[in-house]
Image (tube, rainbow, N blue to C red; front, side):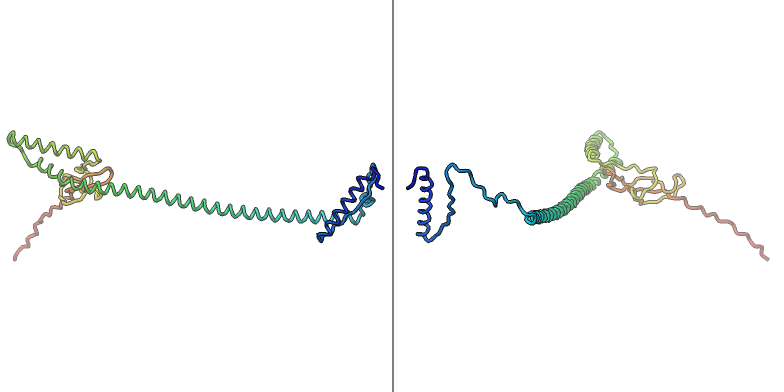
Length: 250
């Protein structure tokens, strides 16, 4: 007969038995350890739980902990070495890319300077070529001014009209940097002058420009056209004929 005090425990046993029966019916087995616990009883502590570890067991546990600690340190060391290798490789790649960037930047700067210089030289070359073609017009104006002598008012009017055109042309050339050479009385310089005549004289030192036959011009610091000049040369020595002595005749 099941009393009221044992009724919960009996109910638990019936439920466990039912669960075992169901497992057997489905081809599975369940093992339960039934522990009789009386109501209002103190928990039972097994002796195995309170039994102290033996020195051998403690030593084995310590060795296991040391082995695990050694394996962990080795794994960390390998990971650190791997990260250092990756850092070194990344540093090398960064240095290589930086070096490539510096070379490309230097090449681009040299290219920019070279292109700017070539552009400037091309502009000066085109300007020189164009202005040189205009210098012949200036030469003709100057020849006309030196040779034509107006005789009446009509000729003077024509003279003034083309002289005004000549002045406008010369002013335009000055504004773009063209300036004439003034070589008279200076030493001959082959970089600036072209000697077409040499005249012996004792009025000027040898190598002095006596006359400018065709005017030379500068474009800034560049020689636009060399001046055609006549250069003084040393005077030729005067040969004197000495009378030879007359031999007496027999």
